[in-house]
Length: 116
Image (cartoon, rainbow, N blue to C red; front, side, top):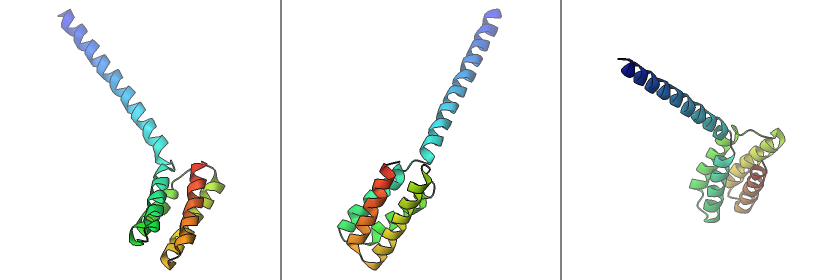
């Protein structure tokens, strides 16, 4: 009977300690990736490619998504504000049909986000 109790207690202890380790690790991963500029960079690069193809419908969607994600990005507040302003200007220039201006603004935003 003692063997069964000891085995049960050991397995219960091992499972409970193992579950705390994975929960703490998963929580840390979520916190670090929630405010990263990587998703904004991905949308900016996709919008740049689409603008160079002169197809204005998809980049406006990518710019909208980059703009939404850029509000969550943390880091140097001045850089984040400038990058967000560049995305807004790129969106305005895209709507007006200014390919060169929109591409320049997206490049500025991309450089600013990569500096974070």
